Amino acid sequence: MSDGTSFLNERNLIIIGQRFNSDIIAREAAEAAARWLRDEAALAGYGFGIAVRTRYEEDRAKHEALRVARSQAVATKRKSYADRDKEVSSAWAWVDRVKSTIRVESLTDNKLSTDLEAAVPRDDAGLEAGIQALARLLTSCKDRLGADAQVDQRLAETSTLVEGLSSSPGLVHTNSSQTMTDTAQIDLLDGKLYVWIRELNKAGRCAIRNGHLQVPPQDYVFHHLKHSGRATPAQPTPAPVQQPATGA
Image (cartoon, rainbow, N blue to C red; front, side):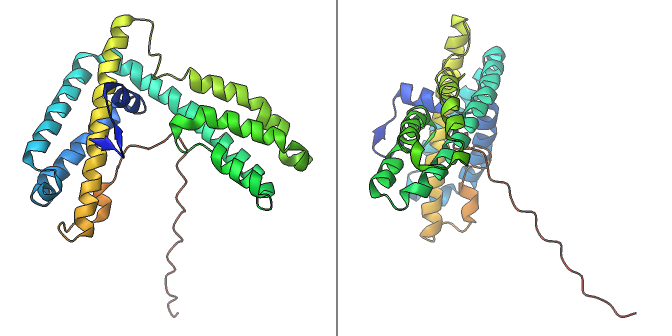
């Protein structure tokens, strides 16, 4: 299991697992297991045959056992996840507003455009540093922005956002050392399962592209997990179907 060229040790996997609700991981993992079993003949040629699936199922069984045996840790994490998601969603909304505000000026300023590109965070892990970088950039071009751009308001929000992210639940679960240990173990299995499913999805899409697997590409994506705390765009409401007029 790998993420690009980065080796995923236990600490990396725990950090990944902290991002996700254990209950949703379990649901996603169960559905992935069913797809894997169904399509194993094709997936085996991409490294996801029965031997690898056996290792996956061992991790899934450990995860389920932890969820059952350590309900307090799971409940603590469930609340931590909800709180963390709220903090991260607010931070991404701030980034979107500031990025859009600065971008108006950066369209005709190459240096500002380059600095903006460098400051915008790429994922949840870069949010705290990204907000601080964007705040410095916003301060530097404040005089070029209109009075109604709400620059002072955005800058005043920075410290609260950074503080919320730095103390976001998921890193500090509880003062109880035993529950912290339990939750770290659950985080580790959450992270392992997430990476298993992510890599399975990649392999499945490769098999589909190459004509070795005849299923919809949408089968091999995450169905319940968000990759980020960023708000999910609302889906447009379909237009009502117009019925043909009938004669009197």
